[in-house]
Length: 225
Picture (tube, rainbow, N blue to C red):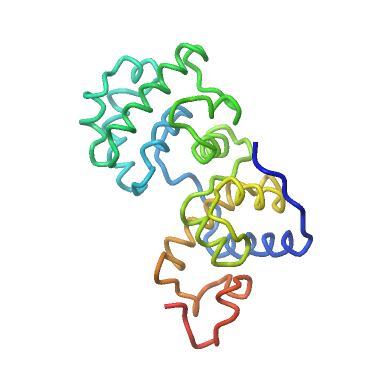
């Protein structure tokens, strides 16, 4: 369970305005990981740890043509899967978790991926971030994944002062409409990739500069570089 948070009307307005500006800037977003089923999204999300979405999509395209269900993956041995996901990095741990999670889904959930945070996080290799991705993008259930971009930008902007993803999630979900949680995560991630990449944020041209603690302190002609 995410930690409790003291609510702030000012922070609620700030995040709502940030959401509106980012939505106007980038338009509605969808999950960056290619998938056709909730289970495929679960596998792709596990693979995405310390790996780009582009690489994950490149790996899962042929992978999902051969194996697509929990039963398919549960029947694999680690060596088979490791060869197919090698390019995603940390392939041994990821293969172990994907196979173990698949077997748990088959044995405990009758081959149907569960649709609650409590059940999803009982699966091997599935933490709150992965569960939130599946909930928001596969089931349409409010969920706010906190990835490295969300963590970095929320700290940079002065929204939070913590590196703990669960605490960041708690702050954001306490101040945003649940219907906006998944979209907010997508928008912040996209903003992090385009306007505010790590180490070289373009504060001069940032659309949410006035809402960012760091950007707002800089002279108009300066950037954060």
